Amino acid sequence: MRLVSLGSGSKGNATLVESNNACLLVDCGLSVRELKRRMGEVNRQPEDLSGILLTHEHSDHRRGVLAVARKYSVSVYMTAGTAAAMKGELSETEAIEIVRGDNTLPIEDIGVTPVAVPHDAREPVQYLFASRGVTLGVLTDLGSITPHVLASYGRCDGLLLEANHDSAMLAEGPYPASLKRRIAGDWGHLSNGQTAALLEALDCSRLQGIVIGHISETNNAQARVEAQLDPYVAGIPAVHYASQEQVTDWLTLE
Ligand SMILES: [Zn+2]
Ligand SMILES: [Zn+2]
Image (cartoon, rainbow, N blue to C red; front, top):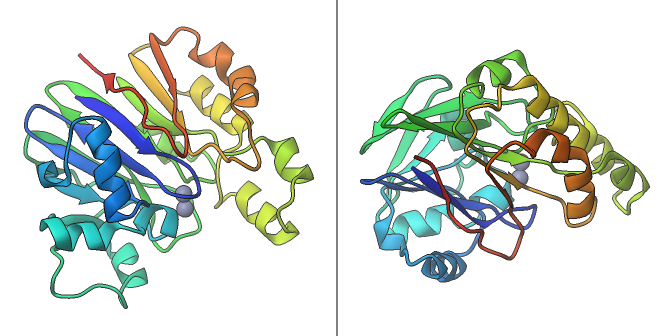
């Protein structure tokens, strides 16, 4: 399996996860045109998609999802809570498949498992992908580290993981107090320190590669992320940093 981040951050998230037979898009916070352009950078096109997995209804994840689904006739997978939150936008035109936490569904040769996470959306999940003995995890948009998250992500060969904010930069930054509380709260996003604690708690010995993502452009800086995470990622063969505007290199797992 392999993974590439097409864009990551509060202005739009989109990730491709591929096996030999399937090409899955996790979230689409990009417009149709921008998705097409960024997929083109890695020699893919929207017509290649086997499915779209939506994590939750926040606009930085959902913005282009339904338009892409309609234009290219791709099924969208989401929880019942996410579908309820998007009720006003859904029509007969899109093929919506409802997923449930911990219930693995096969899409081509990939077993896809949604994992419930604490985040301030209706029924947010993140995803695990398993194919031919390799497990890949996508884990962004969570406010705290639950035992369920630790148990679910403990055996990954590759991981896309959020390091959203630096706690001091968030506290001193320009956001209103209510938004600061939301982001730092148990239903918001992981700080660099929480991401470090998560990496320390997980068994990272199997990890062939990691992509650090959903890094805030306002409340974080890559140098701060690196300073906090270096002790935990130093032993991982491939370490990539995803950004809002740049497509990353492929993370390929054997
Ligand atoms: Zn969110
Ligand atoms: Zn987000």
